[in-house]
Image 1 (spheres, rainbow, N blue to C red):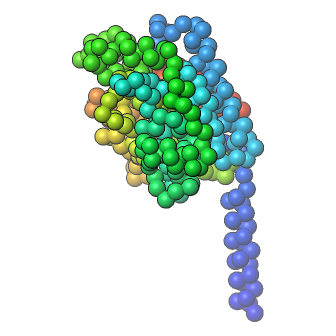
Image 2 (cartoon, rainbow, N blue to C red; image 1 turned 120 degrees about the horizontal axis):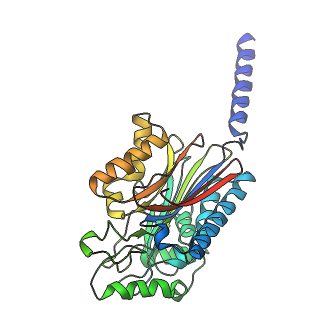
Image 3 (cartoon, one colour; image 1 turned 90 degrees about the horizontal axis):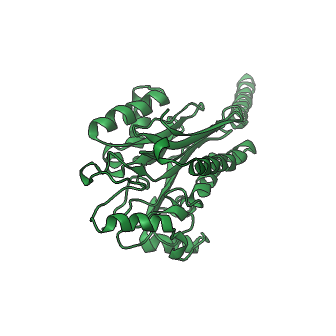
Length: 342
C-alpha cells in the first residue's frame, strides 16, 4: 500500500514538472536579426537609404515578435521575420537578390529547430518567392535536409509554396551591379565598391544575407537564413547559408546562430557550429563564443563578416569584423536597430 502511494506521488510530481516545463515564460522571448555585413559606412549611405533600411529592419522585428508575444513558436517567428526581408528589394535575399554571371537570380535558404536539431535547406532556386518557407517545407514535409535546383522547385510547388516568374527578382539596381563588373571578369560580393580585384573581399564589400534567431516562451530556439549569393557568381556556386553548421545552426542546449559574410570562409570554419561547440565543451557564454569565432578565428583566416547568436536564456551577441552590419533585436518590448560599427 505504501509502495503504491509512493508511486502515485512520484507520478503527480512528474506531471507537475512536465506542466511547469510547458508553462510559457514570456520574460525571455527574444528575436535578433541581421541583414548583411561588409563595408557599410555613413560615407556611402544617404539619409533616405539609411531610413529605409531601418524601417524594414523594424518591420521584420515587429513581424516576428508579434508571433512570440502570442505564444507562437520560434520557428514561426524566424520564418515570418525573414520573409519580410526577402520581400524587400533592399536586401540580397528574395526580391533583392543579386545576379549571377548568366543574368539569373539564384536563391539559397536554411532553417533549423533547436528542439531536435531538425533542419531544412534549399539552394540554387530561381522561382520560389520566399526561399525560407521552402526550406521549412523540406524540414517538415520530407525526410531530407537539403534540396537544390529544379528538384527543390518541384518540391516547393507540390507543397503549395508560392512560385513566381524569375522576372519577379529582377531589380534594376542589382542588374546594373552585374553590368559594372561583368566585363572585368570579377566575382564580387553584393554592394561591392570599386576596390582592386586583389582586395575584393577586404574593401568595398557588403555581404548580402538576411537572418533571424529567436527564443520562444517555451524555451525553444530557432535560426533562419536566406541569401541571393554573390554578384557575377558562376559554376553553380553555393555559399554557407544552406550549409547546416556553417551559416545556420540551432540547438536548445547551446544557441541559435545565423551568419553573414564571405561564405567560403564560413564553410571552412564551420562558424555557426563552432560557436555552439565552444559553449558546449568550453562552457563559454554566447557572447564570448561568438566573439572568439568572428573576431579572432575568422580574422586569422582572412574571413570577413558577422553573426547573430542567441542562447536559451535570452542572452545574445551580434559581433562582426567588417565596417558595418545591418542588425537589430527586440526583447522585453525594447527594440533597437543599428547599421554601423559605432
